[in-house]
Length: 198
Image (spheres, rainbow, N blue to C red):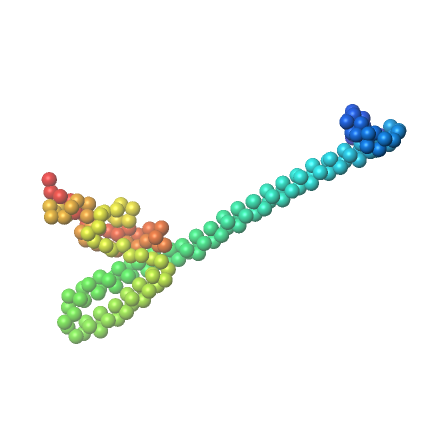
């Protein structure tokens, strides 16, 4: 007893007159109906196999594209994490560096006294070590004066009125800022900004 799929295939094959005509023309033989059905079934299955082969190739191409996209995205994420994984540790060091710099500024006013010279040398050595670490990990200090105020890297703490200096210029750095890999701001520089008197 035939199932529905076999009936459907036989109906499709019997309705496909073009394939029957081609078979008769090519072989110039008298085929009985059963032979034609088998031949047409073979042709039909061959066409289906070709369609599935094309679909498999398309799936392979799509899989390859997705694999490449995933690989690129993963590499970007890994690179980003590698670059910025030290951010929290560096932020915890910044107050220490600020204190060292303040101590140096204070001691430099009394540097003529011999007992302070050794302390200044030690603090300078520690500061140089930090600067080398920062250079190695692409951390840039923001401490330029006489530059235009930039709200993306500066935080204005005070305004100083002055007609000799153009408006919106950074006059004094109250606390240095730091930027990581020239893209991520670790801490804005706290600055005094100039403004002309009205």
